[in-house]
Length: 470
Image 1: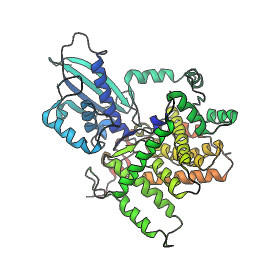
Image 2 (image 1 turned 180 degrees about the horizontal axis):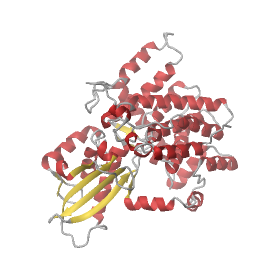
Image 3 (image 1 turned 30 degrees about the vertical axis):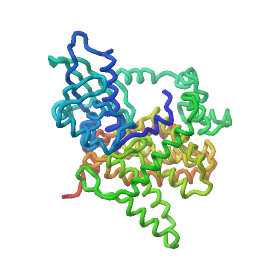
């Protein structure tokens, strides 16, 4: 499967790519299925009512991630990249009051979120920890259409049939498959990526650019710049906002106060040498405070890890010597290449991998991107990605109260710091190192498989259950 830079960096809304953006997208896809009528159950009557059930991690942390709201908005017809975050609460309230929805092309249908949207806390569905079943009924209450979707991380959504097809395809040779599809550099592993770079004499970013242009034609720079602008706007808004984040934990926004302290210290010769870490942290925290508040963010590669790559881009642009606009594009293309390898060969889903798959993947992407932007060789870039990922292995996903706040906001800051450190270490070497990135990705996959479910975005273990007394 070709993963575009715009598959890895999707514009959407918080607080979660897998628990908010994914279910919203699934609900909107279900509307398309209903309008097409291809899966309509033979003999059913007139479409009159909709229902949904959330399973696995979508159920256990769905309230904290606003999954119910996402499903409601998706069934109205909204998508994450076009929804106005400021209007979401009012739109949901209207549906809860009227108990009806009017999706385009389907007329008015009955849908009461209090009874027709079920949080199923039983065993997860067999395909993935993030399962969602959408149902339609006729005027007699008989099934009209049913579809199972899986939100597999980073806003990606597949149907049950698509997931089965992907698994059946997994044993095929990825190199031959991609070459047949016309991509000039069809690497499916880091080893292939490095070998193609050696043969072609191209950088990872140049190979990724060639694949993107073969996939979608021109306009790549304009689209990259737009995504970067959305990232920047998210940081800037996060640095301006104050107050308490929603959800009941009474977590206070801190980015604005820290940012003002850093600005006040500039030029006074009073900063410690490690102040660079504070800048990285405040950029990342600004993004993830916005994400926690349901604001507009870019999956990088997920919402829970959305602060790492934007923080490193801002750090590169505003703090690093020799930074350039083209360097930012190089950073993004390289980061997306690494993110695609991780998603293809392991997972970026916290419900599958724990936080090693989210912040760990983001840190690995950012490290590779920064190393590339600062002139690193392909071998140094691969080394940077491996260093960052290696030192997130085993990290659990255990958000308090199912909210993407504790420990997620600070964790993005630390992920950004690790990314810069990894890039710097790699640039000090010649690219040779002991542990290949492919092996590190496989180790993450195995670790995620072995990790107890309570540590994988269910809020049933770890920090989520070791809360201070109120």
